[in-house]
Image (tube, rainbow, N blue to C red; front, side, top):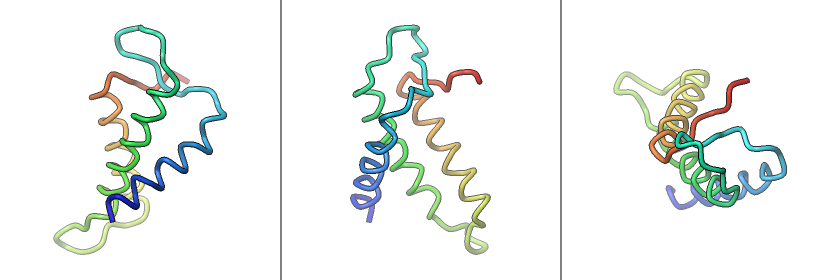
Length: 87
């Protein structure tokens, strides 16, 4: 199941590769687009896995699951040296 989620993240990331980067490096180095996309795909896989896990009290709600997924993706990107650009 995890391999499927990671593969889907790569596919979805490939579709999104056309748009401008929404991340910047924490060390102020230039962003390598290919490396950023690979890291983002990995992080989205982690986020998707975290979102489908259930609470001991029952299933996670859709909104709560989406928030958890976004938080996991953001934390993973930060661990890898990327933060979202200010809007």
